[in-house]
Image 1: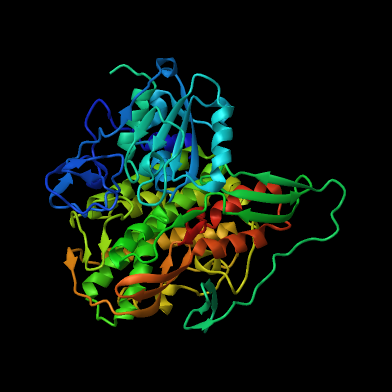
Image 2: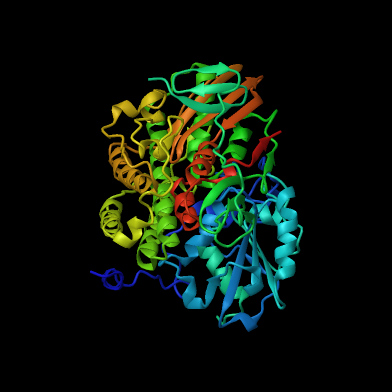
Amino acid sequence: MNWFLKGLKKGIKTEKFPKTNPIDIAPWSTELNGSGNVNCPTKAIDNGSWNSERCIYCRRCYPLYSPTGNIDIFKVNKKNNIFRRSFYVYPIDIGTCGGCNLELKLISSPQYDMTRFGIFFTNTPRHADALIIMGVMTEGMKEPLLNAYEAMPEPKLIIALGVCAISGGILGTGSQIEPDVIIPGCPPNPYTILKALIEAKGDKE
Amino acid sequence: MRRLIGQLGKFCLYSDTYFEGTCPHIENEEIANSPYGAFNFTYGPSAGGLFESVGIDINTFGEYIRNIKVNPNYKKREIRILDKSIEDAILYIERINAAFSASHVISFLSAIDKISESDIDSDVLNLRILQIEMERIRNNLFVIERLVESAGFQVPLYQLQYLIENVNRKIGKLFGHRYFFGVNSLRKININDPKVDFTGIEREFKTIYEDIIENRIFIDRLQGNGIIKDERSIGPAARAAGFYYDARIEDEFLPYKDFDFKISTYNSADAFGRLIVRSEEIFESLRIISQIKVKSKEYKIKVNDGEGIGRVESPSGDLAYFVKVNNGKVVNIDLLSPSSINIELFSKSMVKNIFTDFPFNWESFGIWISEVGVRFI
């Protein structure tokens, strides 16, 4: 049997998300809710409020704080609906543990199928509409990051993926380029990543 | 039989002991007398075809690779771990490499357990085995997915991605986190939902496996590619060359001997052999997992001062930590990562191969740059 028929035989595996709720989600990648003072190693919980941009989901706050299952923990400060039909993203690893790389890659899996929303990966910043920055800022990647940023055509969006790129998490400092979109998590789950990218490219609800 | 594993800080680590000093060094084969037309080509550090940022210097004249050097230091992270408590140290260690996070933490905790001379409950040790074997399944699927992606085979690529996502969801449901972050602490293993079964994964993978190894176009790209038969190999690279090397049977700290499983070996020593070994290991890991009863576990341990070495069989081979503890704090720590050894093996195996072999051979070693580019401060 050829590959085409083998593929057809498997049937449709893509979920209806975001029209329907996520089917299966690991709790410790979602919003935390609770009250009380805890000894948070990254100060993600300070004066009783939870800051997603610092949380590494270490569970030291549990059971005072626990995950709600809400995946909408991202922020889109700037979107551009010029990218509605096709949105090419260039991921750059400036010092990751590999977790963000793995989760970003999985939005192309049949469950999520990012291409149905016109989202694609590109191998060069010259063809990119968005730069996805992952990891803590390392000395050796400062220049390649700047080169990638400058090589991109306008208009462009900057996306910080994962708590390392946003605030440095527990390992270091974040990227020094001001992001238009932040996607918290350690690492962020694919549902959150996909939903944030759909919103950033200016899709209608 | 004693085998040399590699340099772990000030020690040279062997399969059954360690000695203070430097391990015997093996030079990568370099071809002298640069011929007309040979040139140096640098790939990376930020290039779309690479999963992580890494610099690769290749000396070639078109197709034939004369020498290759991997520079993992572009994304080198300084990890502030010294003088941290053991609980705090775990937060850092589990973020060295997400793909092998459980292996890293469990290797570190094994060193702590040995220093503490405590008897660790067998349920705890079994839960650690469960994590490492789940990690092995996920990682081996990922390596195979990268191989078929290099060949441009879209159907098995998406079938494997589907399976990887399913495994991630099962890990996430069982432990609460898809990469085992926040699961292990000094006295507890957090279980979110113990009623997760892995049936279905084997059937699903078997079909894909049979399809890809029957495909002549695919296996032609792997057979004879990156041949390395070296006694200093580790993990799937060693077992693909017929060496019966595996920390699961050598280091008795984790009770693998209580489980029915076999060590998979092959005799081709090439990228195809590494594919076969990793695939067979997925079935064996599923067998091990099916023998473990899952329940949430807390345990008691009194941490002593002292130093010790912990070692596990990570998905890409031996992974070891040397840890020194004083007043409950980590005062010295060294890591021997499987990727650092596999980078040397890859570089050696790549000489005299042709340029188009490079992506297949690179992926077949399952190297993670994040666990090499680390400096503890």
